[in-house]
Image 1 (cartoon, rainbow, N blue to C red):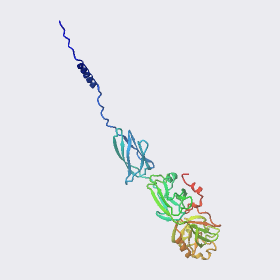
Image 2: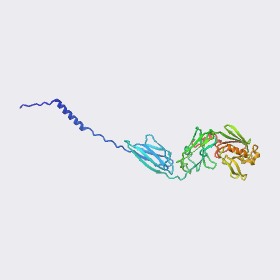
Image 3: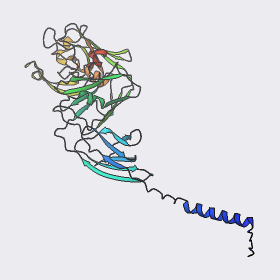
Image 4: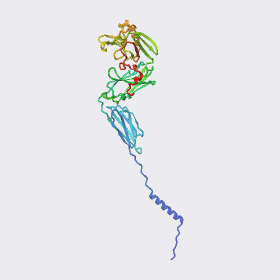
Length: 389
């Protein structure tokens, strides 16, 4: 039998082969992956404890925003740690305070989540308060210290001192010193190394809210802020009990000299020596010797009274001692002068002016807690009274 051969053109074979290969490749291609929805971060707010910073953390992501406010709407500032996974408040949590915490965190894939919680700390068993001197927005003399008297004992002095920030307009060098006030209470004074420069502006920020006094002192539950300005004149009062005269120096120049009579030599009626700071101008007051341990030596109304110590030393008018002014010391410890001199002197001085008192027969140096006697310590000794040294 005769066979017939059929020839297929080469270009048709090639086309068929290509078609087969293309079809096989399409069948084996992997499916396209679906987009990941992302995973939210887990936020943890550590229950706040009084006296410790408040902390927030995020696992599986980072913190995008943290807002903490108290019940009055005041913010508790803080900062995010390295890597963005934690946040710590700058301030300590305060007892008796309610904090609302709002957090936005960013997880994997950029997925955001939010969390909100409220935390109330127990009320403190005891609260400590303080009294500040000088008064706010006052103008004072060049020796006025910044003084804080605490209502209750302070055992954690270093913790408290860290929260006391003094700012001056000219970078004045100074230091805190802890002492016992004449009242027996704990006290902290900030004294410059030297007398203030005239015109210095001083501010105290006592960020004590949430600070524990320690022991039986209790907690501070608020902050304090005050400020004062130093007089634009450097005024110093020099009292020489040996020559029985008082001199007013202003910017180094003597502008007034007054004959005086100081404390009677040889006993408890002697005056104090050293630097005393004018604490207050009290005007006309009743002076009774029984209140300062001198029996019934005197009980009278006294004009132009200027307090120098808590123990009762004043400069004042003493017309009953007129024959002794400039001649002998015959007072009960105060610095007496005529009524006319006392009137004009009273108008010249201001609280914070230093009284530099010297005399051979005195009953000792003014103690640092008896008024403002810090200037009777050397700078090195005063610095040792800081709880941070």
